[in-house]
Image (cartoon, rainbow, N blue to C red; front, side, top):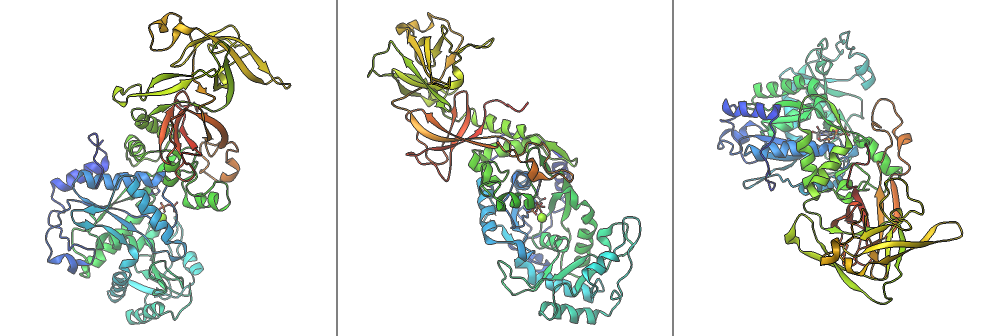
Length: 585
Ligand code: ATP
Ligand code: MG
């Protein structure tokens, strides 16, 4: 694990469980053969040097989003804090939707968040598809043990005979067929002799169980589909709810942490592990499943299906569009790994579902960047300011701290000249109440420069202000003894017209205008905010080098990053990560 906790971790119910398990030495005799496998791989090995094993098990069928970050920080964080190992396991049991592209992107993002899957000299990066042989052997053994059967009902028939929450299901006519017959059929299924949906392997548990998940759940189905790693070697694939406990057990996971909707699956999880233990494939202590509440963040959707739809239908510009709640999108927007980890720490872990406001994520970003982002100046909506009593062709250096809270960061300098760019909003022909910036007759400070008094302005035919005129007071330059001789209420930022660097700046608003686009039967596409992206041609401070990924706080405007894909020092493209204050109250 590469990331150190900066503060003592906040306790939560999972930490309490682990504390108790360690105290009771629940896993103290668990062995680890150095690689995943059934009991015999571990039986004669040393005791596992990892005190706990957790896992993050994404399905490689899309990009990771902020919800996954919660699970990543939780699982990798627990392993780090308890001197354990966290495995990155690709749960690739669903061949149609999975691709190598997603595998690569997931690896990249977990690393970016600051975590890795190394423990001592182990690299705990695994694929569920590597366990297909073991899983298949277990399936045959479960049939032989009388715990599974091949059902020739159609998927529709199975659905109809499953019963409801209030009524029991009915047994399949194939339920009591001899084990040998099921075995022969399973082998034929594996050998490609039967079409998709014609039969399935089911666990033989209890069609009258009050828990519908225990009414003979399907373990294997036929899918004549190409798998991104095993190609066409298999045409039967295990179901997630059966495969998952097997994957955990092969990897000697101690604490299998998943989201609340899997609570009802826990009995089947335990049933599977106990049967396989009784058959000699697994050894105690078995993995234990625990559930926590998933993250629901306001103003975004986090279902992969909906995120994919946004991408495929071009509502956004790809998975890493800076408006997307994907980790790739957040990175491009300017979120730092530290800010996302801080956010996950702040929201905590519990068993109660709750919605987290997007502003909490933004505040974590500000809290992370405020002490470290270098300061700079930009003008997003420029009008020209002319200092009429300042000589043409003259230029002088002004000095500002690189970071106001960090004297060690040193100073930056930039030239002041007769013509400057200022924000259009910093001038009024007629000021409203409490407006302290420029208007005819008012005096303000050009930040880090001189005090100036507004003497007039020019308008075009449409009445738009095109130029603002001021006179400066020569003895008032910031940092000189005369600086405080004139008191002013307004302080405005500016950039020398001659020296300003042009930049394309993207200003973002919420992707959705509804706080909960994801809920109920809302048409989430109809709730897209049409103004989520505004692109402006702006000016930035001379000396700013827009290397991709560089970031700044532009005074008064917020945090910005040079776009990772499109920015170059010659042609800066900057994304606003967040404003300085929450403007969404
Ligand atoms: P989807 O249903 O949108 O496809 P998923 O939950 O199936 O998402 P996986 O790739 O299976 O996505 O998720 C990997 C892990 O991340 C799971 O263990 C899951 O519990 C966790 N996870 C996914 N979404 C969230 C979320 N919003 N909050 C917390 N954990 C999450
Ligand atoms: Mg899933």
